[in-house]
Length: 146
Image (cartoon, rainbow, N blue to C red; front, side, top):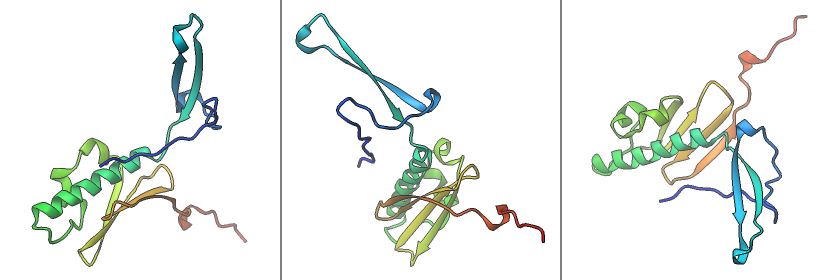
């Protein structure tokens, strides 16, 4: 299994994304063709994916669910995170609020979110990972006084 994605750039290696240096991974590509004395050096900023920590937590839940199902006779998935604790990497999942929804015990959706932003990452039993933004909560929308 491998979970990954591609960052596209142009021929010069530019991703077209400008970020602050503290929010970007600096990648230096050195090229030395035919051992010539001149070396060309280019620097490309690859933006950090703000969804990555939540994606990693979702993947951790996915694999824990698969193991839980195997240990329990391939009958059902865990219905809450507490059942998965022995199989989870706590340093990965602890920062997040994780909910598990079972669909007829044969399928699950794990929802990973936090209080920092409205981004939600979901993973299903068939390994589909999605990243969504939740609408703002009604309580956070100011209501004008009449």
